[in-house]
Length: 211
Image (cartoon, rainbow, N blue to C red):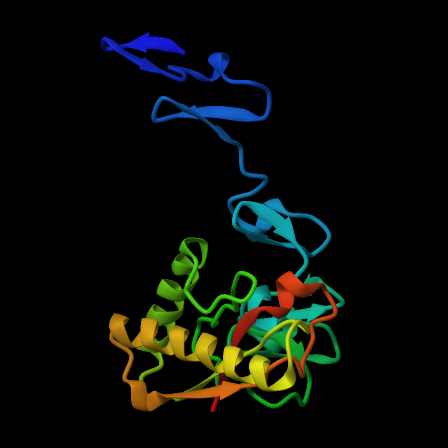
């Protein structure tokens, strides 16, 4: 402890913190591994300050795809000539020629939201994602979306269906409080039927699908 303004605090600057921590608001806190996706390597995405494998295409940015936990991000473009021979410039990004235009191509993506074990409440770490999703839905006012809840393999089939519904409803309620019309959102419980293959932490989630 050190003295600052006649108060005992943990630190006043980084030199007073152990390795791997920085001084913020007079407290030593663990340095995040990342703050943005571009600080991660191997196609990983930045989540809660850590570089982790992706679980869905929506985490890889507009036009991107999640392949075996690694993001394959689309190249930006203004015309077909800037893309590979087998790609077209669609919505500002290079995509495989002939691929159907995603109805969600509105200049933003809806990020997957993750939950704790046996939990349906929105974690503090996920609120920024949902706030960004709310802004995206505001841009796409003419479109509707499915809020798809998932669980890990713990519990019975009946319990997991109910839990996945509570998770999806919790997300829909949060977005409704941000201003999204509830009539635009369809809650879809999937239970444990669609595993990501990336572990239980990635299976406890809500995904979004444009309708």
